[in-house]
Image 1 (spheres, rainbow, N blue to C red):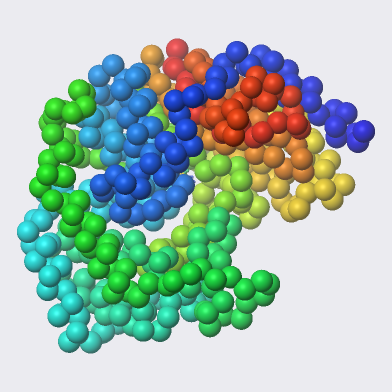
Image 2 (tube, rainbow, N blue to C red):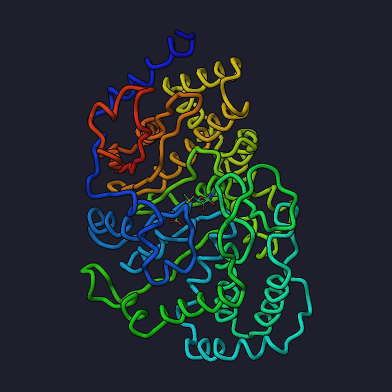
Length: 476
Ligand SMILES: C[S@@+](CC[C@H](N)C(=O)[O-])C[C@H]1O[C@@H](n2cnc3c(N)ncnc32)[C@H](O)[C@@H]1O
């Protein structure tokens, strides 16, 4: 038995034993509902495949079950805005914070639809191809960065540039946004790349010199094919009956005709949450990045370039994101300065105290450090990433508790992770932080998988399936 396994299970097992009664297999929540999959067939939600998103069904489920009547709703990791739009449809005043310009642009495009001149949009769709046939591109709109260079076939990129010149001439801002969004939504399909979590995967046909086993992404659509299909989908979803069903006040029961604009804050929730008023929100439905090395800035590099971001922007964004890649550096000093600058140095100390007090957290950090010394982790920065992930989440949870009204709820979707064979009970550690800041842990819903989670499968480290959970916390 290694030293690691000898010290390991105790603190986490203690925490597990204390919280085991809160774990509940959620037969009604399947993987489809908790992931983006269920949005694929939903008008408007299906326009942009934000794979990291959850479904509007999930948001509606919790709001309808626990939100007695619509109030104020927040998602501090808003992504493409599933929480905000699902809440808006049910009459909630919806707020979202999102750092990545990709999600912010998707939300902006969706917002552009309300009050847009749909007839004018349709007319332009019909006129587009004849205009493009005679238009000369006046500019190179796509300015590649090293990680996106050669991502498109030459003729695709040429037509994409011409299309963007065409878009730039549209005077109506809402219509222009929606046309730009249509091209933005097909970038992966028309490129030699495939989104793959940590990096973009490159097809063997690209001009890049590639190592390893050749990757064939299958048929690569031309820009014309992909854009036509996307515009058709958007036009269909903008049909009067679809718009009506989005805005009507009959189905489901809580839907209301008072359709409030959504509030999007673009920035890091680590700095934006502290600026929000205490006891302001009735409900939070959110899903932070998971502690799984997923790199949003590389995965969405094409979209970031399309939106005009250069290499420095992308690098800065990567650092500002909640730590979930091995490249993220510690933000503690930055957070100290920030909290001090807003006169909240005490809050900073309180959060650090709660983090340091967690026995399970200390155990995880110690075990990962040990595994690192023994060279048993496949990247030596994993311990730093894990430590900072939890530390930053501790700040987020402190703030979420502060701004939630008494009796209000927080629903959080997150996955546990495992490194060097060691399970990290993200659900339990984050719930422990939440308890310290004034949340009651109502339950931790564990998604059924395979044959289902028996209580045996839910406990005991090392031999278990990694839990994928939805936490339900209520502010005292
Ligand atoms: C799991 S996704 C959320 C998806 C969202 N639930 C949806 O349905 O679209 C996590 C999001 O957190 C964002 N994010 C990461 N770090 C952030 C930060 N410091 N502040 C705000 N958003 C951040 C990521 O860009 C990503 O969009």
